[in-house]
Length: 107
Image (cartoon, rainbow, N blue to C red; front, side, top):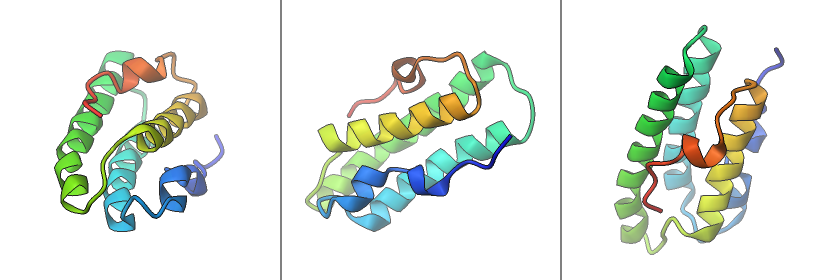
């Protein structure tokens, strides 16, 4: 399996000055945690979904920090995170819908 392309993480958020890079980095770290988990062996779809749920709930918590920095997880962020998650799902050939993967989002 080829290596996951780091440049695809949250590309639209990094390009948009509305999102502070240090906060986008925090989301990227959470996404990287899921990728590392997937790279480290076989897991059931249920376990993988649990990992995505944990990631999504951690992103939910970051929303407050975005507000504090005059930003928020809105349409561009939603789409950028969704595209990155979709890329992860495709890269690892996972039979999980992107909306299901981030089902616990409140952004």
